[in-house]
Length: 453
Image (tube, rainbow, N blue to C red; front, side, top):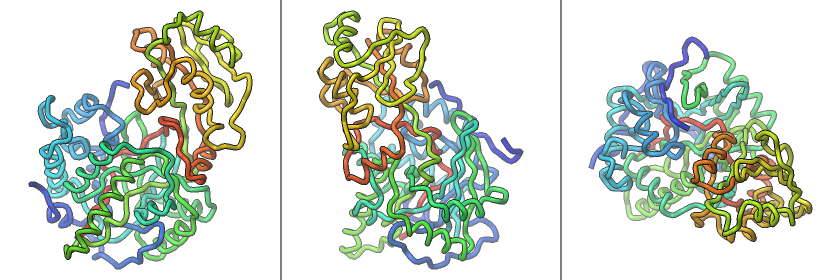
């Protein structure tokens, strides 16, 4: 960690401010007045709302959907400028408060206005791209923060691979409308492109605008690309891409599209709403730099079987081998199962799925060969007998869930690949729920997209 990195100090266990408060934001000293930019079909630069270098460590926080309410409260304790007070404002209200009440969204808007008025956050004048580097141990990925076109999302040029839940969408719609801004970036990928990589390397060759340490000791470094020639070069390269692929943030993307649709209607009715709502905040990385971890399953009970009977049933379609020590699957079509305080390796006897991008996923195979026929779980999205554990928590968490009685059996999977994700999205298909766990995560508060009037 370099000498100028500021720490977020977030250690976790595993009608109010309206347009004036957000749009009339103080500028960084010495910045030029706004310049006109040409809207592109896929992406364009934007004027970010961001911390000053000396306040980045006070602001940085996990994204709103990475932590529980209790974890968010713990992270924000003693940190008055922690961005969770904007993205998860219910942490400032009584524990029994409705997290989706109007008062919660109003509190978030108040807190955003306070951060702007006190110059903890400032608004850049010049439309810019931002280079965002994420470093976690030996893993480094470097992407571009930008705003992507809602129209491109609607025509599936910003491609998705998951269903969304209306309630979660509505929560973010109300949050965006209350704040008049999108404060949670969508993690995207693009097919690795030599021209973009070279431009990113050139733009990030010097010292960053700021660095901050976030959750799990992840270092976030940001550079601003605001020179008009550099903006044009990077914008042209990005707009030559066939597609962006949503990796994490389907609900934020869908909510942004709903906000845009509502504001288009207001414009038709004569309101002045600008056009920045037609774009939403994205950070896109080369597909071969993103890291997908396993996304594992725990099941509440054995469906009336004893552990021995379950092993016998599994043996019909899988080779079963006891393991002397916990071990993650090392190749596709293999799984690790924790049952009755014993790890087993499961290997499918017949690998099916063929060229079907969804059917050939390891989680689809496990669902088809084991989870549905042996446990009767036909729809993991809604069946409460199954739960999902991100690979960042390790095999130890699977053991803990089973040994505590919280679950009866656990399955560890081989990670989905980016190539598989893009194949599903290109085919306009949907992956099973909780198929990918991207790590490291982006952080909240470092860049926000304001909807100008």
